[in-house]
Image 1 (cartoon, rainbow over the protein chains, first blue to last red):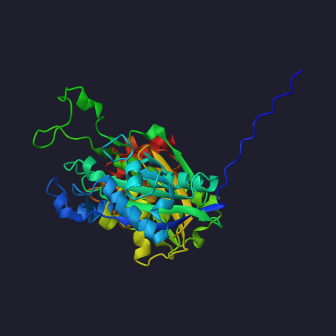
Image 2: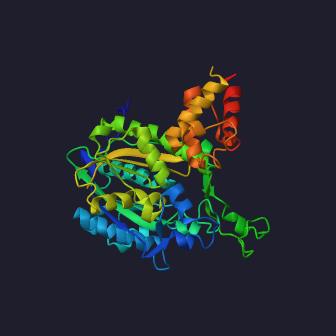
Image 3: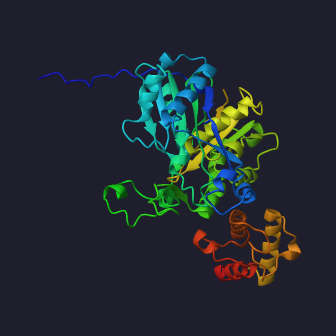
Length: 349
Length: 81
């Protein structure tokens, strides 16, 4: 007879009771690109662009403003805002779809260059919902105990993936980086995330051509620009289908996020949706029946659609302009290519 | 089931609310984009409101075929049947 071997007891990790956003920072490229510059390549008008998208100008990154450089600038501001030293960061999550260097993930370079020691560092690819996905993971890490402070960065150089001659999208996209520091909290300050994916709609927002088409060597079937040169892959979308989904389906998701947090629209101070299109923002406000007192992020007017970077950039601007203040309750929702979405309610830093 | 007349009236109210076009301007032969200044995004809102009001489904692929008010009325009449 041998004694029954007992299963070994694994010690659980010890996390914080709750998590919160402690600080936010943004970086916008130096070059401002007004609609007039976009119109050099497409047959359209300033009035048409403004009425369809609400965009007057956007920032496009220069050669020195790489995904890493913009992220480091935004992260530095977020750390300063949070009052947290870089060496205390134990996780770096970078949400992006436009870093053209696939491996290694840019998160590790950013972590190293900000002086964060050896944190867990990785990229997240979840389109315009990327920030919400990263925030949800960061909250989980803090509460579960695998990191005390986590940097979540949304960063895009969408000008690299924009077809400058496509009148439906040429005006839409911009570049930039936004970052937040997520850390421990004694009270709930990031609500439950309502998130998901709808892969049956994967064709509605996508890259025009897969990268491997360039490797095969036969580029004769690839689209060409007005000079006859093969076009670089770009982002394309089915405008009406995406608009319908974004306004009517995402309003439901936003309401679910409010319900999950036990917050009513009346209790909200701010609404920070992904800055996809001003018309989507306006229609969502109507669909959600948001009261007048709710401050609405409209950063898209001068920033364009910056995908994963748009929510932290809009959050930073809403706070910097005094339209919202620290401690305010904000509904955030991201939605985009996948299709994917993520919505939650947060206390602003 | 709504009659042709009721559908025109319903669409006129929807177009009025979404695009601010006077109700009396919404007639069968009017083009949404050319005559009524309903752009492609407003058209989506009109379609979703019409779906709700008349209890029909109008898929995205069919929306682009609805050029005139009459096209939309015919579509809704058929979809109701």
